[in-house]
Amino acid sequence: MDHDETGCQAPERPTLCINNCGFFGHAATRNMCSKCHRETVLKDEQARFAASSIENIVNGNSSKSKEVSVVVAASVDLKSEEVETKVINVQVSCESSVGQPSEAKKAGPSRCLTCRKRVGLTGFNCRCGNLFCAAHRYSDKHDCQFDYQAAAQNAIAKANPIVKADKLDKI
Image 1: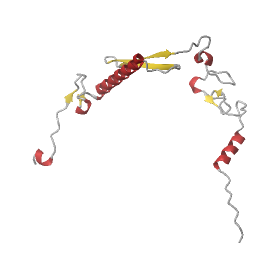
Image 2 (image 1 turned 90 degrees about the vertical axis):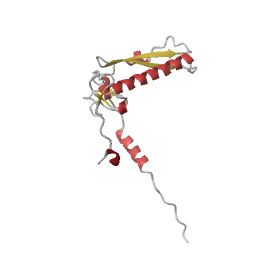
Image 3 (image 1 turned 90 degrees about the horizontal axis):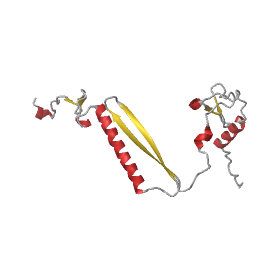
Image 4 (image 1 turned 30 degrees about the horizontal axis):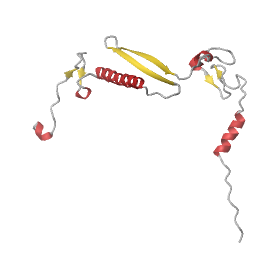
């Protein structure tokens, strides 16, 4: 059978990546290997985002109230395969906030209410509104003030409304 009769084409010979990294490229990825294509797409998106962010800042597209803009700039080093990301916060304010402490300074480290152990991201929030470690997360371990019985009764009452039929008139 001839190739023209069946409509099949002979497979093309594999082509190397245009970045000469040693892997094979594909026409769908602009003759690059998947890794080089991913890095190229990432660079293009970051450049586009940075250009649009800078354009917004230069054109003054900000409201009169307090606004925080975040610009992300990244550089890719192909030799060491590390991506460095830098975040720059730009704060525009029309009001002066002198004398007001920032929220980050107020918070401090998160600690268990019972044993004062630092819990960080692994802390458990109870229904009573407090933060506890793994040992004191259960309500019987920390003298919880939350009324679980009333909460369950309210949930059941909301889920099962009273259905009452209208009275029928006698003939």
